[in-house]
Image 1 (cartoon, rainbow, N blue to C red):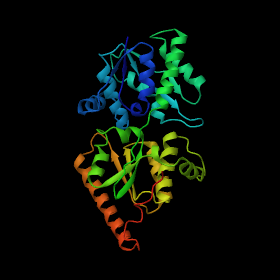
Image 2: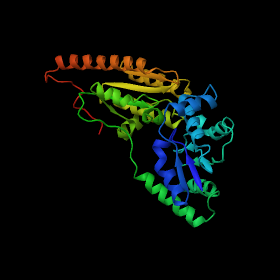
Image 3: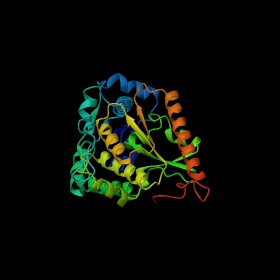
Image 4: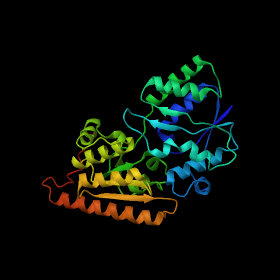
Length: 316
């Protein structure tokens, strides 16, 4: 039994869990390649126009797997934390894909509620049915998958750069180098290091979220707001680079909340879609890095220590 796993959306964060689970069940995995132009073109062809770029890319990954597997796994990730939900597009992702791409094999799309082990077991039993109905084997596969995921670490935390920025946005915008045109490499080449939310202080971010008049309903909103607000308020970074998908409803709210919180703290918002040109991104990133460099030099000139005031601070 060949199970196809699309390398899109939250694959970079949860691939240890899903790949280990299906491997332990005895399935042969077929994983789509890194995002490329042909995958993007296929996604744009089959996906509805109103969808954001990452969802279109996900369609392209599924299209690549269409004739290469017996089952396609389309994770319907609903909850990662109690009282919060993922982007609403995740809730209807399987229906969106199956109604847009003809000729798909059987789809595994049972809802994923990762709030308790009991709910994860429900997902595991339902998802394993096309492969095996051996409950002991499924239980063992789930335990191995949870253990694999618990040992997995992701994120960026550059060291040794005179300037550092918070790289923020939904994970699939940050870690898919084709979607973001390898923004980390661009910044590094300009002498700018990056840090992502995985390396921010947990208590500092939680404190910022608690100060809001209402707890964010979306997990990505809570994490992104707390991360940016904490690092900007404590001057752990000199700026923020926010990667946002055009037409993302959650980002439209979070960006305004962040701007209201950090005021005039330097922040570059890069809106991306399938029409975004790399030359335009390069120009904006270079201008932002140049501004940060001049600001840091100004701080150094006015510091009695003769160095950038921010360069010695770190959240960890």
